[in-house]
Image 1 (cartoon, rainbow, N blue to C red):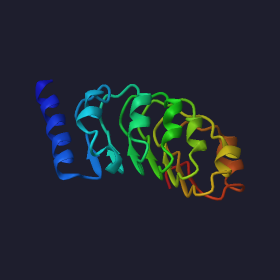
Image 2 (image 1 turned 90 degrees about the horizontal axis):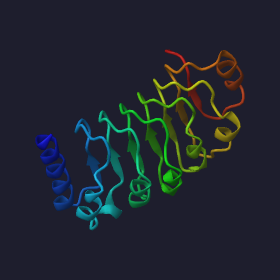
Image 3 (image 1 turned 30 degrees about the horizontal axis):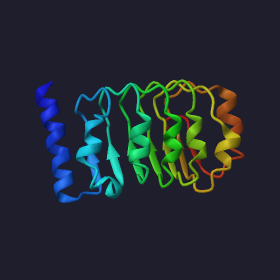
Image 4 (image 1 turned 180 degrees about the vertical axis):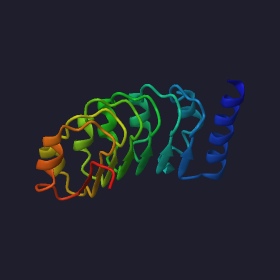
Length: 173
């Protein structure tokens, strides 16, 4: 545990010292995003464009995370235990790519449909059965929605291919 905490501190300190635009805290065994990091990173928060929290043990993402990193362009939360997103995800007004693959979503995170800048949504390998087609169709920049390895209802898979203006991946192709 102490070794993991020290690794997180080192990564964050390097990002702050070097003024990086990305923060990679993948594989750090995090169960939540450490609130103390907001203070440590206050001088570089506005510069962070990409965050990866892939392959941790996150059960939730706080509203503070969303509001503090509202300038993000890419967010990778794949390989966690997330079941939902906070409503504050709407604060991510510049987000173009979100990776939520290999989590525990049973319902499509509807807040994503309000992020008009989104181009890529990856929800591969969750437990989602339905896709909000109408809402997604109104997203002006959406190019790709990956829903592979979800237990989608068969009517969901067939009816949507004809009405969508983006690529929908539903089966192993």
